[in-house]
Image (cartoon, rainbow, N blue to C red; front, side, top):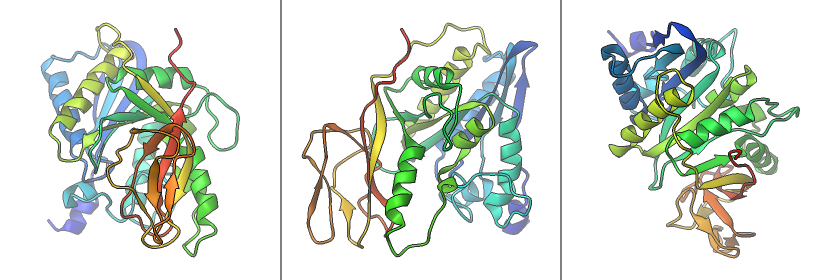
Length: 320
């Protein structure tokens, strides 16, 4: 079998259906192919569902261990492009991610909630991304914010971040002034954004560094907590674990080759006003505008890419 044959699929999804009514959950891994913790955590959960260690009594859960099989086979972030950007249904798919995007979007439409398991490149503590407050705006209208925040809070990690799509729109405004290809705001849409578009709710769990074996344990614990939170299994509700909730409010772009984040920062690190976040190619310092947090620092960005995002303490919390 050739690599081209492998790229023609199939996707493997495993579904367990309870005999009583309940919500429909989908758990995805390896949206990026160099992030092995998701497949490891999900396959462990599948095996325990099969042996009865985990008993799905209500609703249903669909496990998609390897969402991007080409990238996973190559052990690269992308196959032909980033699957977690511009994810949508395409009548005429043009690349591998387009082709798998169609059945992935169809699967997401069949469910109420999504747990998308990821990892990251640099050192740092696990964290979770969640979406906007309830709103009727044009960018990302939403009506299930309380359920989504409760899901983010139950996963067992202490930091949650929101504001991704608003900050991506800010990134595009800055990028439009640079000599780089224009992008549409839909480039910021991935699995969770598509899930919200379909009327569900979703979180992205970042479990730790790509090659850290503990990352799979973080993902597995989050799966167990999610099943309990949604009461697909008989288990106590997991206690909220969040300590820091961060709202992304600014983004710093690479405007000249050589612009870079200051070394040593990690996503979620607290920063004081005036702290040096980055340096321009000419050596000029870029400092924090207020007390806050640094997100996704990049010490080697390309022109038009984010050097880092900046966040502040959010007012959003679990009720009660």
